[in-house]
Length: 237
Image (spheres, helix red, strand yellow):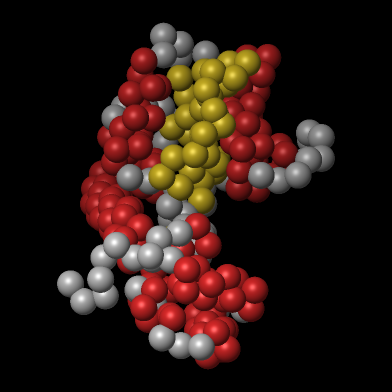
């Protein structure tokens, strides 16, 4: 038997496949809630010769895209009350909370409670509504990820190296720092027409307005990159 622990967060999940006695079959690994990655997960689960049960916590609406996709593909999926899972966690050793560690704990919970796990069942009306919403969400995620990939590709020509200075889209809070920055400064020419002092001040004001950390050193570094960088795509094209 294989217990699949899924630690769900907004837009992504961490997955761990575990057999009895803590034998790791795969993971912990991170997947994004898009059709291609969920399809790969389902393919992996169906390729196993063992009896497979997926276990996840109820996390507001965040777990719904994964739950719906798994159920559409006939995967046994148990949704556990967060309080029940919390009680299980405190029975074990204290450890630093991470997504990888949590996915392993959830997988172990599945093994320890194998016979008591119940496959998720919903009423037909609610299931149809849930299916529609989940498909819309996955469609949005697919477009969003593709747009980010295209943006970072273009930046290699207009602002080479700058994307390394930003963590892009954060599923936890829905913010996309790189896209927000590029909305204001999309070419090195927009930066180096200012003095360093002017740009640093502008960057700090932008960060404050957007709710990001106001990092003066990063602003100075980006200005230096703009002065030394060589865009291969002109500002007007």
